Length: 313
Ligand SMILES: Nc1nc2c(ncn2[C@@H]2O[C@H](COP(=O)(O)OP(=O)(O)OP(=O)(O)O)[C@@H](O)[C@H]2O)c(=O)[nH]1
Ligand SMILES: [Mg+2]
Image (tube, rainbow, N blue to C red; front, side):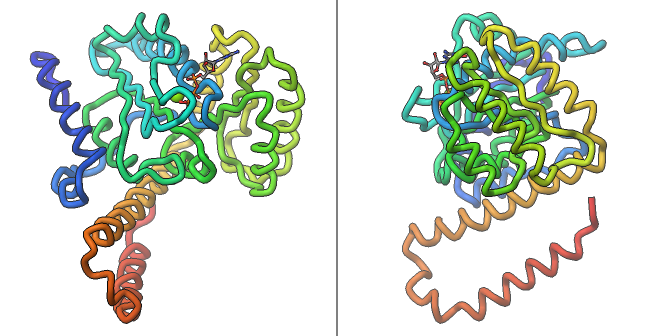
């Protein structure tokens, strides 16, 4: 937890812990593991294809979220909002989080905000394997809210659902193929769909496609019908801020707990996968893999049985 008396020290500790979480070995990660928080900060994922304007949107949304957090009576002066861009490897912008420098500069010096781009190893499908470790590290620091930008490359939009309390998928008018792909998956991937750059031609069609898609996909929530938010004036994110707020108000505790359980599952599967990759990279113990299948089956069954005995919620 941050100490008001030593803010710089505390930020240094956080920075150090974050680099360990993003680059450390599984042994490092396990050594740094802390018990899960009973009430982690509200986490908003901003995801979508490369170059749709996620960073710009985050930099404009952050001041609005911060103002809300600061308006809560008794809000502390520092470390209220964390803004992260994880695995910024997009070819479009290089993943710089300062999409809109002017707006971001207005809050970047504010001790209430922590802003970081985190390049993390072991990336896969646009979403880092260490992403839950990175989030947990930030959670431990005691922020009230976390905004995390992840480049959506295929499956990672789905993974973002397992990561955050609120998923905002950003599209732009020419991402019709993407909408078609979602249609075939028949899955809701987000709580809020933003049609960014909605002043460009084709925006109305993309909105229409999304609206019709949302009419027949399986709802992810019984308490929230996903919203489509067109952003015609990129400088005005009030509608998105309101949508985020409305979604938060609509989520009941049981549903929040379920999402957070999925985040734990993502943590577990990422840790197991990464450990296997570590071993394979080291070249050890892989030559006789086929002959050891029966043993692995035994281990996997034991793990699954143990998981099935864990208490619900
Ligand atoms: N016309 C228009 N252009 C925008 C808008 N938002 C962002 N852009 C431009 O789109 C480009 C990409 O913006 P970013 O905010 O970096 O997009 P991103 O999705 O974060 O990109 P990656 O992180 O690289 O995937 C930049 O050239 C921006 O200036 C918008 O609302 N309207
Ligand atoms: Mg970006």
